[in-house]
Length: 94
Image 1 (cartoon, rainbow, N blue to C red):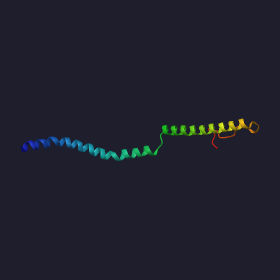
Image 2: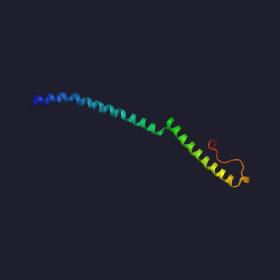
Image 3: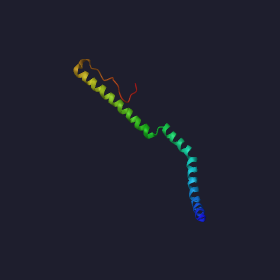
Image 4: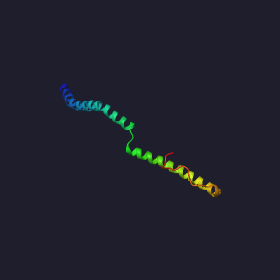
């Protein structure tokens, strides 16, 4: 009976040692993985920058469209006092 327990323990030892090594390796690499994730969160990728720029330009173009429509409506009501459009232009920063 004792031989069976000793043999079973001897066979289980290499399996548990492998698990121990993997755990130790994951503990060692964990700080680097966390630092890498923090750097990803802190920086903006080119794709994100392009997406944000596109969103900003669409908002500016929508604003320009609203102002132009309002200007055209005022011009239809009172054509004598209507000059050239000098309102907001999306590509031009004010």
